[in-house]
Length: 147
Image (cartoon, rainbow, N blue to C red; front, side, top):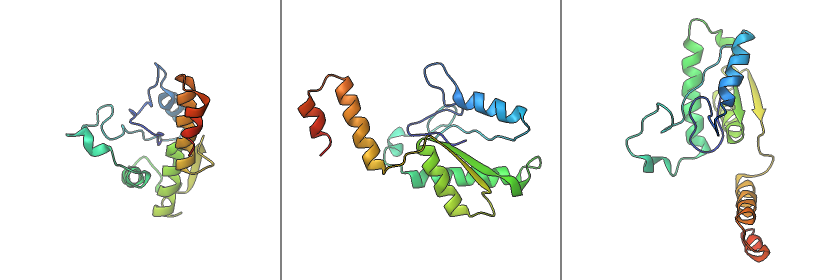
């Protein structure tokens, strides 16, 4: 399971809800092996200097996930010919990068949840305008964020 933007623990905990825990539980009960991991610097993942996380890109996260896929494929309880990646939000883009990088022999399927249908720049600009509007910015200030 690949989380979206921001640092998340393996449960993708948010406001007391743990959607990745719920999803992993449902999949496991259906006989699907699930690997969840804390993002760099989140949960039990330790990073000496959080400043090193500031400039990470989706490509960097894809390398992390590719390493996890490689690990999962070696687990004795996992059929390495039936491994896929599920990504949510930015994690959907990361999952697609992993599939591109590892190829169809290592990533047999993708599940993409709430992935962006626009460029990251467009998504961020829209998010910034919406946040500014909710924070009480004037229409002119909101519009200026779109430039």
